[in-house]
Length: 310
Figure 1 (cartoon, rainbow, N blue to C red):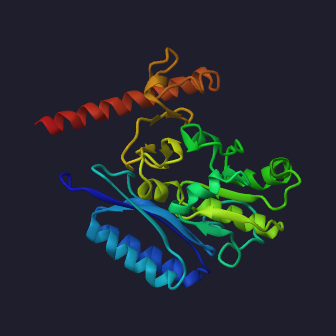
Figure 2: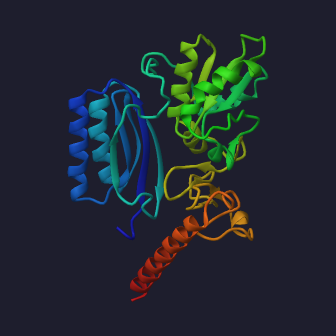
Figure 3: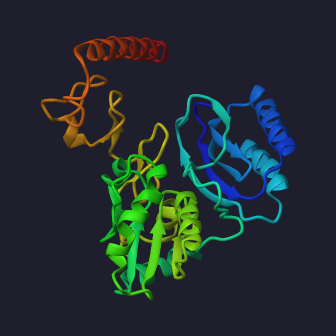
């Protein structure tokens, strides 16, 4: 498939997923993988499914048919992009307690969540002076791109969001109960679950960007876009630009932070070993391990390059 284009589908759905259907879907997907070039990550839980699948177009359609049969009438949020290279090494399917971990079992997004706002009405909502805009992603995602004037909760992970709400949300709302609360994330799943939390806490005017940043970038022209920077994604591409193509960031394999081309020119940057974010975070033994790992990676790259030349 070296001359083909991979179709990449990110998807999620909140619905009551029965245990027998979970097992059946997992078995069917691995059966398809045996004879086809599929990679990705799919997380399945009783509350629904969430993930990204990468394959040639016809295979993607077969997989979507399988998933749609299980999801039924429930909303299946899909975002599509393309890549010349595989964005995962292989297909992983994980069965977990939650499809996106918040740690609040009593909320149920499939029954009570905020109001969807599509890409075309999002700009008007976030420009409204009566609206506060909250980025529900992790701090390192926010660092490379976000919506203009949005609030950054500065979280290490989504599990920290409920605590942030309890300790900070009222500061931004003030005494104005009528203010709109608009939330967004990469593909829509975290902000949808965040709206469910806020609804349970009694907030009324709660909105979330349908399809997340990825759908917004697909729908809105660069000239009209209120999103600044690039969108972090959890695969080999690291970040996507406004055309949903691989952006300018790579990843530090020591600490996992996204690093720009300028960051790589920093004197503290050593590929695979450290960047300016983690220069003081690891021991000498850690760095020796990172250095040895990078040597092995470089050897493998050289070997593959020679094979391609021959």
